[in-house]
Image (cartoon, rainbow, N blue to C red; front, side):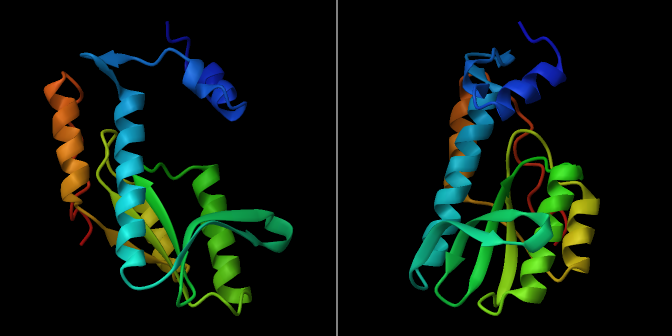
Amino acid sequence: KFQGWKPFWAALGAGIGASLAFPQVGSVSRCEINRECAERAQAQVKAELQSKGPVRNHVKKDCGPLGTRNIDFADAKGGYHEVKTGRVAYNKQIKTQIEKDAHILRNDPECKGITWHFSPGNSGEPDKRVIRHLREEGVDVVFHDFQDASRTVSDLQAQGACSGCRTIVRLYC
């Protein structure tokens, strides 16, 4: 039984999010769909980057007073890449990530650029303020329509899952 967002985020932050009861849509929970879409998007961005050279996963960068930034991938040319799926709200966590990325762009001589990759998910599209803030800070924004990711979503939809998965595609291009 879903008991509101406050316990949900507290439990997720405590690392026990998998044990919560998520709303079901057909035979698949929305959480499972989001996780599947995110994993596919991560794998496909990584594959694209690897086709151009070696890639490091989960790179940690010191951002001074802002703390540490965990970046999804770093490519061989010094580019850092963050992958987001579905709805990305303009909240404190995202603002902090953007501020840390801006700090890295200004202060890390190894960094040759930062790109945020957005791909379809079942929960909507990124907030326009996220895109605006990223661009203001000099962060590149790329939108993907991964064939495999959308095939996965179609498979999940066939099992009775949410139908709103592909709303982000080329929305801001």
